[in-house]
Structure formats: structure tokens, C-alpha cells
Image (cartoon, rainbow, N blue to C red):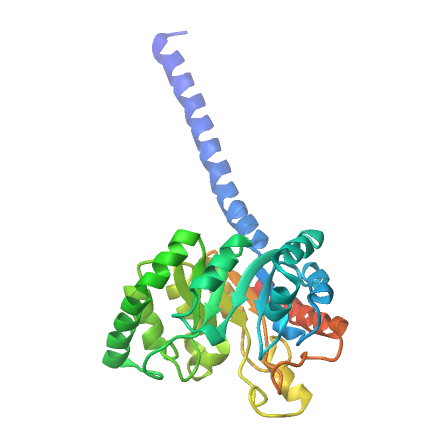
Length: 316
């Protein structure tokens, strides 16, 4: 065999190996992408307030039943589990968490406000909790230039509290509540522009964005995951603040007929690989009662919503 012919055969063989490898990689890439898409899961946290003032010993066993690992502890007037912990003591609460293999995910403390969180952050850190959640301060529902100035001023006021959160390894999450600073999408976007800390973020509430419902998926893409450690899966309803038929009140829960399309929302969360907490949530009227009469019924309602979200994920 001539040297030229031998080199030619080697070249053809090498070409075949390279093209075969390239073809295999081309086939594998969509399969890997599809595998990642199929494996995406939401990180659920269970709100104690959904159970009104039921004892923690009855609520903690429900965490795993709703596909969650962590609990969100609420205080009065929405629940009283934070007060229950004060009464039983932190050691007893730690033991209870261990017994049920539950993490302390969130402490929701609206009454403290954003400037009154120092002690709660220390308590949360001591119990290896992750997020303390509350509302904001400042002008009500600013937008445009007013929102820009107000958000910058608020973030300046938050600096010592954010420094404490960074020191303790916890995160402050602020809800985009109506009648407050972060209500309008302008404020949310300015927050994302000016916030520099991973330990300060937004508790994104869809029900407070019902006027801008079509913007929710895009806001998820813009804000998540960097600026949103927590999301409420809750819809707006006529029964959110006034007494209404239970069927109408329950429309705050995903999949109960409220009308919010979660397919583009969860697609956005999947596309940005959102790993923060999501919480299936609603407000009963009056506040402080369980959303349904028994622990089992509350858990079943949450799981009905979760099944709906799972169906949306399968379509996303």
C-alpha cells in the first residue's frame, strides 16, 4: 500500500469518527435539554396561615404531604404559629422540626415592618431559617419618576438592615403589596435596577399584579431568580377582603376557577431555572381562620392547586 493511500484511508476513517461523534452529540443535545425540562421542579413551602390557628404539631406533618420541605411561619392576625413557638420555646420547636424532617424556610412578620427585623433575623438565623418576609415603607403605589426616587431612597434606608441580613446569612423579602412602595411594575423594575444585595429581594405576589396580569410572565423573566427569593401562587378574587361565598373566596387558589393562566408563568420560571420558594396561598375572611374547617381539607385544597400547577408545567 502506498503511503498516500494509507493516509487517505486513515483520513476517511477519522472523518467517519468525527462525523459520527458530531451526529451523536447533535442527537444528545435535544435529549439532554428535554431531560432538564422534564426534571424541573418547583420548590414549595407551606404557609402555616392556611391552617388558621391550628397547632404546629398538627401542621408540620402536612409539609411533606404537599410536596414541600419547608414551613413558612405566620403570626397574628393571619395565624398564631409564631406565638406558639414563643410559648413552647425554641428548643421544643427545633425538636418538632427534626421529628417531622421539616426546615424553617420563612418567617412572615408584617407587623414588624422592614425596619424592625433585627431580632427576628437573629432568631431566624439561630434556627437555620432562610427568609424573613414583610412589606415596605414609603409612598403608596408610586410609578414613573416618583417610583424611581422612592425606591432609591428606601434602599438607602434599608442598608443597615441588609448588612445585618448579610452578616446572619438570611434574606429579607419584601412583598409587592397594594397601597405600598413596590406595588406598581415600575417600582419592581427600579428595585431590580438599584438593589445590589443578594440578601434583599422581592416576595412576588401575583394577586397584587392583577391589573397587569399580562406582564406577569415577563416580570418573572426580568426579576427571577436574582431579585425574587419567594413567590406567592395566589390570584385576585372578590373574596380576598370581604366576606363572599366560599367558592368565590377559594378562587384565590390556582386551579379553583380564578382565571389566571399559569402556563406562561411556570414556563418563564422554568426557562430561568427558578429555585426560590413558591407558596400556594390565599386569604380567608376573617383573617386568622383556616381556609377550610379541618387540617385534612386544607391540605387537600393545596394539593388540588399543586396538581393544577403540575399540569401547567407539563404544557410549559
